Length: 85
Image (cartoon, rainbow, N blue to C red; front, side):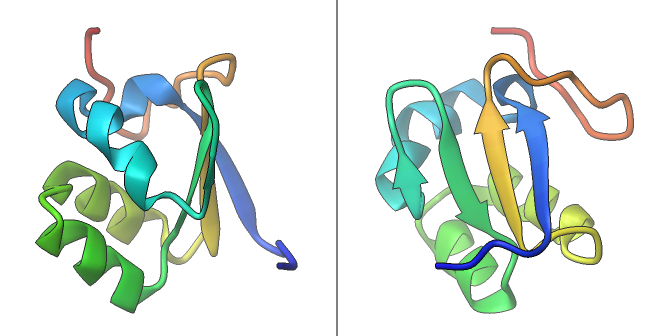
């Protein structure tokens, strides 16, 4: 898989309940990081799987990146909603 347009956001941008179960739907994931596609088909897939907040966040990022990596060590971007864990 070639990653041309990648955004990196803090896992604080993931809804805590979705983060717990969303790792199952990520392209690549480990205990800390997860990679999601901003493609319309994948956003619909995530939404159907109950990851509505993730799908909405990816919708906001679709013009910026093809993939989003959520990393606990990344900075929290004030342009996007963050959750208190």
